[in-house]
Length: 381
Image (cartoon, rainbow, N blue to C red; front, side):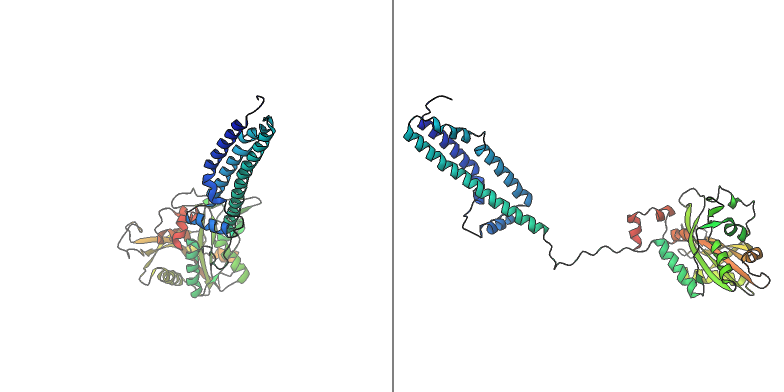
């Protein structure tokens, strides 16, 4: 740096820097205010909010102000370099004048920067507090209410009908021994249902139940006869998932054991259930079939609830909808449960809840019932 810095040159440089600062600071002038005015910050905050200033906008203003402060008062700024040259003025009197002038300008710069910074920080604190404030007088946000699954809705309707007919609701375990799953139900050893291709076996001779008939055996052993009950629940079979099959599905089976029970009681019970489920004009028909746990056995259909038997897409233009199987309880089943077949007789029936649910809601794929897609399930609320 050259010796003997001229006062006039230093003064001119300082004035240029000071004026440049004033021009750049002009956009922050509104944030300075009067320190004696206690309501200045509140009024300024309202003005900013009226002008749609957000918290992020005010924070951006503070960052820009800090950049301006570093640029004009930082250690490497032109203003800092200019102040260092005051001591190089040769004339003592002019050196004193220069020192006073630069000090006055320096105070003017730092005071305005500090005042704007403090007010901006107060506004930011106020905006943050306003954003985080909780108005306890506002009504609470109620969580959306859920609803029962369509299978559960249908299951409860079925249960209500049979309870009104005098039947009890029984529940049972989902893992059973071969005795309850097959032997007590008169299923022979060579029956395909006992193979690993059809049943989920675990260890120690246990298997997932393939029908809720197992609950009927437990109920007869526990309660004896006479007995009227239904057993809704999950069952498991080795089916490949497709639009009409699932390896896990819901089933309901009914049982009535008493003296002098006949096929007429079975037909009357099934017909009354279907009339209460689908309407008083519902017609029922029985077709001969075979099940190892009933003799005689029959499958039952009912007239289509959509077309009334005229034929439509739901009933595949047949007018009838296949529902389930039924029959008179085989004497061997009664003996296995500790009931004397010479004194008591009974009927049993069963059908899948999932398939009925799919028919009632015209579902093309029953797998939708188990995918837990909220967009699908909320339609049943």
